[in-house]
Length: 86
Picture (tube, rainbow, N blue to C red):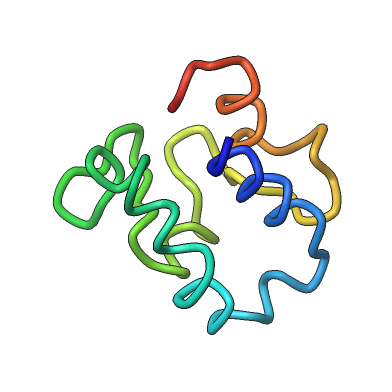
């Protein structure tokens, strides 16, 4: 539930790309619980590093993982919603 709430929060904020402090204080702690074991600076599964704001914004081998304000275009949301990722 918590990771789904996070994904919705990421997608609902069109200004997310301008709010790096929000990432560190509110988003990263949740990603650390469910995502950064496989998607970090040293182990970038699918080329994706979710341990930093810049890594999240850069996306992975399949392109961007979030589309602020456009959940239907967000790979992160699709992967969480379909239970392909925790």
